[in-house]
Length: 428
Ligand code: PLP
Image (cartoon, rainbow, N blue to C red; front, side):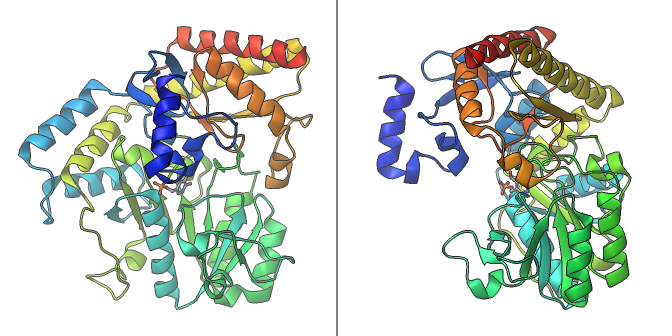
């Protein structure tokens, strides 16, 4: 038995499912998870002495690669001053100003500790600000695990939402309406029915939790127009896309300005951080200036701010995102031609440093329905073949992949060669 397998068995005794976040358990691909000892640049090193080219990047934060010396040094310097004060610091001001300079729509910013907290707080704020209860979200978009967001569509488009998890009260879920991503007609139909009651639309502007699905032309602008018409708050959940698909996030890439934005992942450089922000007129409704309550013992933590600020400093030169986008394109072009060569149907997509690949006959995947129709069994086999070749891909067919600045040409070529071998095995 490998050390990873031993640790997994041991972990299952005291940690539910052996993991502290479900996707890590490999339920989506079968087998047992690899336990990681350390990481550096584009590589993960496991407890059995194996190394892997990593395309998960801690689910997004590691845009500069793992254990970047400048980020590590910033953390060490911050730690030497103290770990947490529960009182304001200069670093929080710098962080808010830095975010605002990169994303000007974030006129005011509140730091939190995770993406879940960011979206949960943004929704409460939107409800408090508008005095409305209903929320519109999209099937297949993930916004963290707060109650209002663990909801799926009821049996008809306009019926009340149903909880996707036990423990979420149906009374709360009924306020969430779920419609199809990239389908502006469904959004219009819901607003025609109950638009005056809708506090907010929340959307991943590029969906990264049902593989990787970019918005179709006009979709995001359509959401902006409907929110303007009905006085609803448009929330872009850029926890994944922020500083990733472009420095200024999806809002910069597609030129559509939300009222509120939620951030996480990259903004913490690997530390537990989230943020939400947007129009000052809305943000001023948050305590202590306004009546909508929101707080956090460790929010704006100095060590986390140091890691986040060091990361945001490193990624500001234009060359960074251009290079990362080129690497992602190169990787997916490599997958595409290797699959073709082997006679495997594969659709690929990239948006900046995010990528997706679908085992499907379709040329392009634009909806949740299409994403769920892909060949998941083939994906599972592919995942394990790649892992055996030393490539760590997301252990789920429904997650986007991430390329970092640290991935070298050699790493990308090694990955493409592994994929070619895996496709040939799948085709045999
Ligand atoms: N929003 C999006 C778009 C995400 O991808 C995630 C996490 O993957 C979240 C919110 C939740 O963030 P966290 O896991 O930090 O709570």
